[in-house]
Amino acid sequence: MNELMRAVVLTGPVAAADLRVSMVPVPEPPSGWIRIKVEAFGLNRSEYHLRAGLATGAVFPIVPGIEATGTVDLAPGGEFARGQQVVAMMGGMGRAFDGGYAEYTVVPASSVIPVETTLDWATLGALPEMLQTAHGSLHTGLDIQPGQSILIRGGTSSVGTAAAVLAKEHGLTVFSTTRNPARLETLRSLGVDHPLVDDGNIATQVRAVLPPGADAALELVGTNTLPDTLRSLRVHGTTCFTGMLSDTWTIPDFYPIGYLPNGVRLTAYGGESSDLPPESFQHYTDLVATGRLPIRIDRVFALDEIAEAHQLMEDGGAVGKLVVRID
Image (tube, rainbow, N blue to C red; front, top):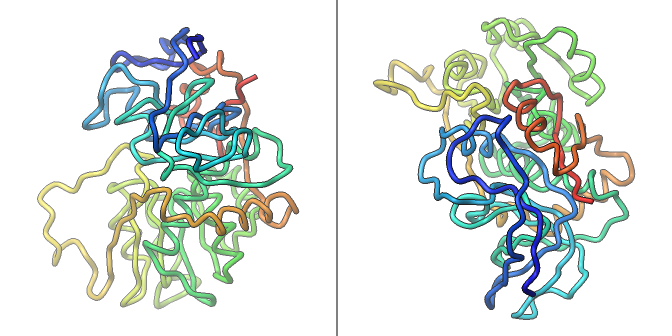
């Protein structure tokens, strides 16, 4: 192609204010890889970890971004048609190879999911990683069943808002937390049955409604709140550790018998694009398009506003997803 494109390139850890858009060559895809013309991408906490120097195994220089949304520009192996709507996520994006913070990205065909929708690009761009993580946490991590109750710890995060909506769609009673009392109404608008202000003792609040405890919990804050989340569950209830909004993800001197309440289970979810079947992503996208699956987008930025977007993400000031629309 021998052309240049705009991209955010990290040569090492930097402050949010130091993020810049550079001109770099448009990448060429080998067989088995797909070049996507990126229309939008969502911001994710793991990209903050990479940019701030908190990630392990980071390779520099790198174009960050663990997801992207757009159209197929080139597929040497013929896996997809040129111009086809697709999303891509995970599989090493933005870590092992260049990711979605660019006008074009090249990713393995296995990381690409086709989709057909009339949603605008910014809305579609909010969905891939958010829905993949929420879906995988609920179904792979927790194996949720209709009629159960679930606690979502970190409920106003992008994954937290999506998980609440998906859990309600699946027939669960949802408890969800926020540290900000002003955001309780936002949780109610998503269909949350029991919005809770996180005072550090959520177990007491959950058990005031369900004395035996909830059936399941999705931990999105970190290991600092995990013990209280575990205490919120009934015997044989399960907590899935997925998120690290607090940037606290290890447990020093972990002693299972002392840490875990009797009979309460702890699992985790990291996930890949393969955990979200194309038919499930299409189903969720259709629900969003018809208004039956309300997805919360906090703000849409231009690529040149990437520094401001990252600062907002780092500060935790967003309710729902932050999206960059490339124009």
